[in-house]
Length: 76
Image 1 (cartoon, helix red, strand yellow):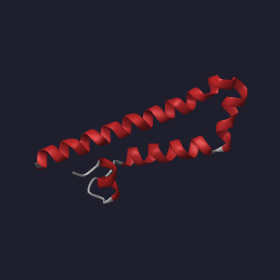
Image 2 (cartoon, helix red, strand yellow; image 1 turned 60 degrees about the vertical axis):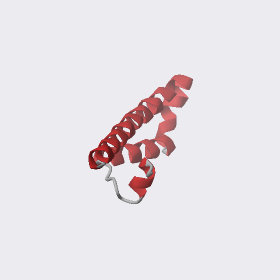
Image 3 (spheres, rainbow, N blue to C red; image 1 turned 120 degrees about the vertical axis):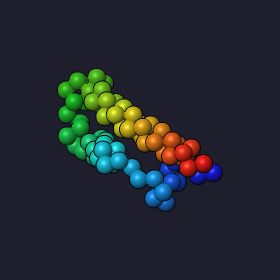
């Protein structure tokens, strides 16, 4: 039984370009120095931009997982 991430690694499932872009953007923005500005200005409330970006990435991940699962069921 194949896992979703294993299928992506083995290139059995191709991720949509928007999913790649959102994942890369989430990582880059989170580690970029400009991300510190909201935290410095708003304190803990400044983390909401990070949570929003990671929330979008999680929704796209769930969409891709559902697409992968539907493809496996169709081929079975």
